[in-house]
Length: 439
Ligand SMILES: CC(C)(COP(=O)(O)OP(=O)(O)OC[C@H]1O[C@@H](n2cnc3c(N)ncnc32)[C@H](O)[C@@H]1OP(=O)(O)O)[C@@H](O)C(=O)NCCC(=O)NCCS
Image (tube, rainbow, N blue to C red):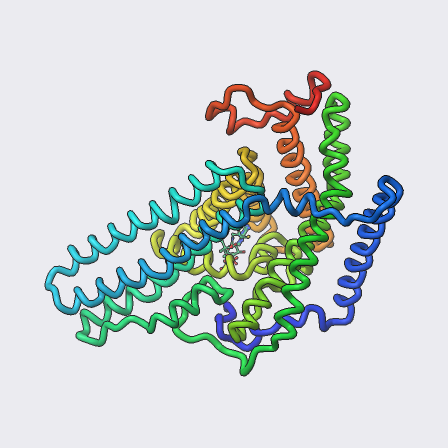
């Protein structure tokens, strides 16, 4: 049923070559021009000079050089250690007679290495230094990417080596260059060969990187014009239920705009630029999630790269463990694991614990199971509209509550930072009682 990784239909999604999408893209660019114009005119009125300010971007990418240093450490470990350990393990299996002992030692070395360099080190780095939130995301998302890549590599390479040992076959590892290629190419599923394009279109690469940078600037303007003025002034009036509800609904458009921008910036521009540079032909990083009529379809199509990894290495493995009897348990567990990892990333990058993705995923799965049990899989009426309504409400809620929490940390700094203080939200107590003054 599934489209294999190498199916031609998976290769190319010419999003911007479809005229209607081109128009939507043009509308986005036109809105960017309006925002730039607004910033320029307001600057001119206020200061009688034109300064395009990059304040938000500079703050978000604070200490990027240190984040890149942390990336380098994680990359060198990922590049050298797992491959070398696997190589020594495969050679020892050929020559030594104690396969279990050798396997246990190799697993222990990898476990200690992973826990230290890909576990403790990035977390400590993010907590101990005053990074901007985007720099934190660089470290944490790269940590997760490396872990997922290593897992896929070990999962795809170790079983054939063990099979070869029992059949007296050749137990060689793929060339190091194949592993190096895998670390950079935009997929989390290891294969010895991938479909390749005949040549690199450098113009396309440059265009995509330029669009990527443009999106970052655009995102910073959106924050500056649509989000910061609202949330940074929350302390001027006491927060009532009415004000909170209005803030959530008012956050719908900025949240939608930011998510579409992030989607285009990363899934389209960044991944396509890397794929093109590496002549990686499979461009199915996302499918038409905007046409989804249900959340299961959305989760299959929004982030195909992560979905494929979750499907093969978590969902299918859990089905194997539970012998395909408890499909619902496997499904729910996959969503819970994914939700926990999302919460982990948000908590470390924003500096507070505000669980949203995890409960949202659980509710979506339970609702899906409940619905299919009681309607026997019948399609919902107008389900694409319903899907968008849920999605917009979910995005607005998350965007608004996290922004409130972020600013409440600034307006009402916690005096005694205990673990309990860190994992509880305090925007309501901060804003509802008294009018506070910014510190
Ligand atoms: C769990 C997961 C891997 C399943 O993948 P999938 O492609 O939907 O797998 P299948 O198509 O084999 O579906 C398995 C069954 O689960 C059901 N299902 C899938 N998602 C569901 C959901 N959210 N709620 C209820 N049922 C769901 C399917 O309808 C199907 O049922 P069926 O066998 O009766 O037809 C996928 O939903 C997933 O990736 N979830 C995590 C999403 C996520 O966090 N992504 C990261 C985004 S950044």
